[in-house]
Image 1 (tube, rainbow, N blue to C red):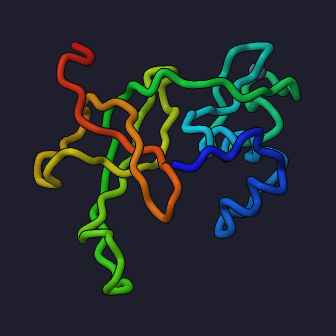
Image 2: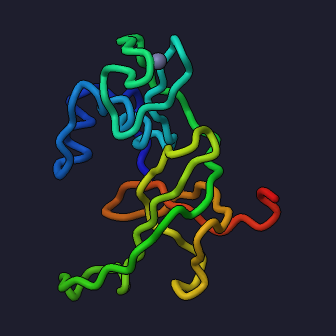
Length: 151
Ligand SMILES: [Zn+2]
């Protein structure tokens, strides 16, 4: 991971050329570049808002700011992707993509890969925690099994 120093908007655009960076998600990606996972949260009622929107769907407040999440959650659902890829790609198939329900709020689900685990071992409701994987010279959030998490 390179040290990018203070990350301005322009740098965020450069780091994530495949992502449509908007006013609503720029803080999310700026934080990713600093290896932090932040999600927008209503400052009036505390509701977490993801996918990112500028308006709280619960209380209609525009007072929405990004906050760091704990990184703990459970696998809500997952799928295995098989895709034709560049043979030079370091990504091994199948690629799993999971919707991880974060402990912060029921229904708050973040899409990411599950790592450090055989695909066959991924099960619904499995406790996981945030980790980071390097891909394309960037660190991306992923989740790994977390024994002793909850329950
Ligand atoms: Zn609200």
